[in-house]
Amino acid sequence: MITAEDVVNAATDAMGGPFGWEGASDCSVTACDAFLNLTGIDFGAGLRGTYSTRAEALALIRARGGFLAMWRAQAVRCGLVTGAEQSGSIGVLASDGVNFRTLGLCIRPGLWAAKSQSGLSFCPANVEQFWNA
Image 1: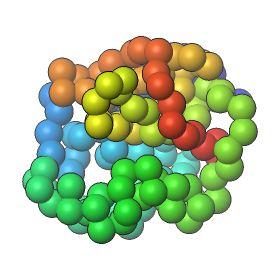
Image 2: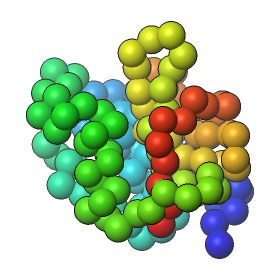
Image 3: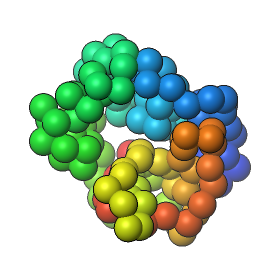
Image 4: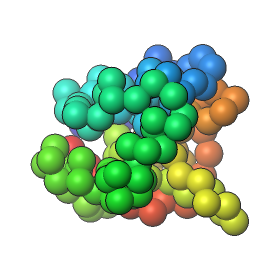
């Protein structure tokens, strides 16, 4: 069983430090790294190493039907399931009032960890969809 402490530790290890679009320190890769450390499942498999700039990341997202559609397909590929929000869930978070999404990890129901432009953030989140291992 994944605990809130496990998620905080994995998120701190993977999501700490500055944000970058080089494919190693953005919201998606860092959330996938933390999820991999927690579950042994690479939610980013097939996407890692396919972009190294913001423009390439956006092209990848567009080519896969958008941010949410891309992660829905990854969830199917990885055999993840929807269910109750729990420590260790991975999901697509949306910012209120803007067209901005990020991939995050559930610390506990109602509290999520995500990589932001300023580094690691712990916050309540508007969760569009999430999955469990």
